[in-house]
Image 1 (tube, rainbow, N blue to C red):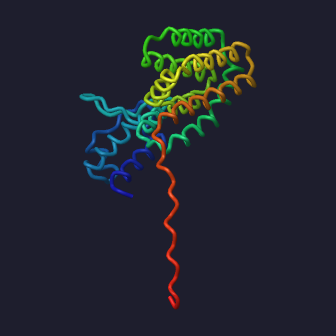
Image 2: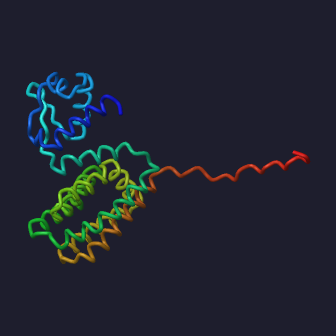
Image 3: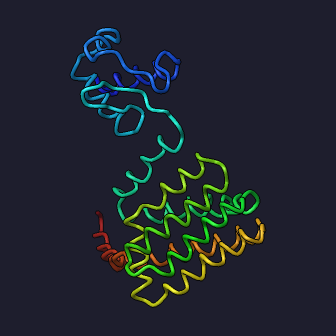
Length: 242
């Protein structure tokens, strides 16, 4: 384990043990480094890394604090990481989405409140009125976040939201718009809303699966075609006595 990794682990142990509670301010850099027996440079790098993962909040001129450690905050990093994935890993991401999103939509159908349903409907209408792909993507994300919020499970909502990075949504919608399939995509969102309004978990599961599968096809269609497979060259026959 590198020095920075060791520093990260030591700070995490302080938090996990409760010695640094959510919202607590960390001791001064030099004091904490001395307390943990690590260098100030390793401490600084560890703090930076933990700030990127939303564990710590560095406030200039004030100090460094442990965040609230709420699930939605800690899991924000999923979306940031997803933006960096290579195209060949996208089928795996959609496989995860198909495992999680339909059951979550079914859960939302069984728990959604009238206010929650109105929020989903508002985002659906905003999607219909969107004038650009960027607007459509934004309202699409808001629609699905409202659906996931209806589950009442912030951890689940954060994971699923993170699996739908903005650039992936935009690529999929651009393809659908060019291919004339955007009206079908709007209809898929309408079907999700109708299932939620009916309070029908089975239907909600089914239409969410259709929607995720359709989004998968739209996005994967934007990827460059893999190189054609070429048969390996024939093996030379062995020479007698070889």
